[in-house]
Every structure is written in structure tokens, then in C-alpha cells.
Length: 154
Image 1 (cartoon, rainbow, N blue to C red):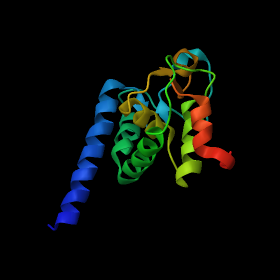
Image 2 (cartoon, rainbow, N blue to C red):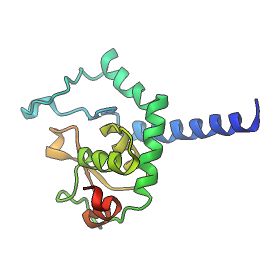
Image 3 (cartoon, rainbow, N blue to C red):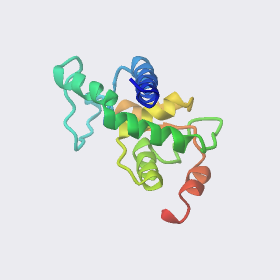
């Protein structure tokens, strides 16, 4: 194995370990975001499988795919430039809004769960929207900082 291949494998291993660490902290986090609380009465476009099923495990494993690693890198690079607020800011973009901003910035597709995982990995505070009824999360991010990164692309 040449040095470039070794470095690439090592980078992927480190990214997978970072994502796995977030998944260990948040067992309801999957590729599309958090599994919503079914008792809350919200309907979502995505049909969420039952916890502990093969289908739910698939949503979790997908967070470690090659595509997810690339998305995670984009998210982490973007988040390196985002200012923090002292508390979770529900007036700011949700994780779904954040993923859309990162897509604009990186010119790449980003999944909601990967944006959440990157924010957790980067040390942002997190709280699931709607008392757990939503797959989305809020963070302690400055809205002005996020919009400054995107600039005229909004």
C-alpha cells in the first residue's frame, strides 16, 4: 500500500470513528435525523421504522457509508467557521435548514443526520425540535454567522 492510500484509509477510519462516537451518544440518530417520538402526532415524509428493527439499523449503518464520510467532512469544514451562541437557539436554522445551507456552501448533497452528527462532533449544543416529535435539531449557532458564510447564495 502506498502512502497516499494509507493516508486515505486512515482519514476514513478517523471519520468513521468520529461518526460512531456521535451515534453512541445519540442512539436514536439515523441518516435522516432523530427518530421522532411516535406519540407526538406528527406525520413525516419519511416512514420511520421501529427501534431495534433491521430497517432502523440500516438507517444507522448508512451514517458510516463512503458518501456519508464525504458529507461529514463538508459539514465539519463548514462548521469550523460558525460562531456559537451561549444556548441552543431555536430562532436559528434547524438541522434541516443547516443541511440546506451546507449544501449551498459545499455544492454537495448533505443528509440531515450527517449535519447533526457533525455539529455534535464539533461540540455544538443540541436539542431535538418539538420535544422529540421532529427528526430535526436546534443548535447553539449564530444565525448571522451562518448567513455570513453563505452570503449572496441565500
